[in-house]
Image 1 (cartoon, rainbow, N blue to C red):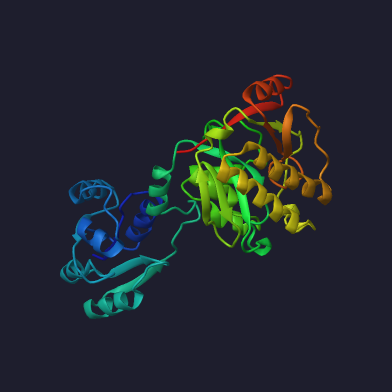
Image 2 (image 1 turned 60 degrees about the vertical axis):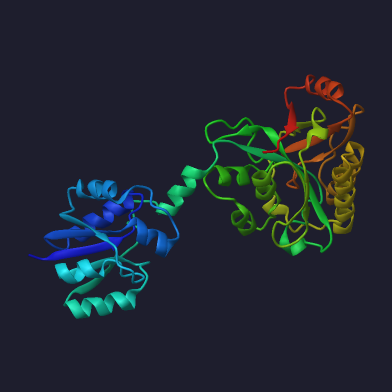
Length: 359
């Protein structure tokens, strides 16, 4: 009778584990599964277990392809299963292609007279997933804000960063969720960053990989009215709760989706963008809506100079600009007070009021 041995954390059992067990069991007549004890998981992975050891053991024992379950409690890194392995003396030790401590496992197999077999990490019928990813999804928030950017946009793109300058933005509500997204897609409000957060990721790496900046995931995760230092990664310079902006912000859908990556390297006046960032930063520091409006107005002039179509001028608004720099999406409007804002919003179904959000 050929005995197959597998070992891992198996902390949150998922379909990839089941497939791996099936494939390993098919290589012999008997499958022994060893999982790392809660103590080992804590010592070796700095992670607490999702279930008590005995609960996890019962779940694994209930799987049809599993013949025996043992708990790895050894102190040797990567070989917590060693004592069970030497006692059972299986014919095969089956691991996945991303297994660590391969040389140590080969040596253990030589000593016991077993063969080490490496299987692909992810069978083609399953999208890759890990216990860590599952934990992130569980910990992800149910809702997330989007954001409006006031000034300094593009200075969060590492290749366009200017030392000593600033990006100014604000997280907004109503919030969104995976089941309820009350805004247009590709709208310039940081939707891709919010989507990443709702799926258990902060989104910074994903945004940078697209060739754009980090401001969206940074403010959506932080919330509030924020000033960030221009640079390669998010560094918060100053934050307010944004209440001084309550009743004074609205957005209007332009009817054209935007595409930031496509225009990230357009020619534009980065020194004027830096000036806009400084103006808006002054507004946040002093809770001065008029000064923030100055920054928005200056940023809008750079958008026009780049070639973006002019937005409709509104006598009741202090200033306006496109949200983001993708030649479309939503436009932001700042008002003196709630009365003017609400009156403007009521005149067009493409307009909506938004409020600052701080958590």
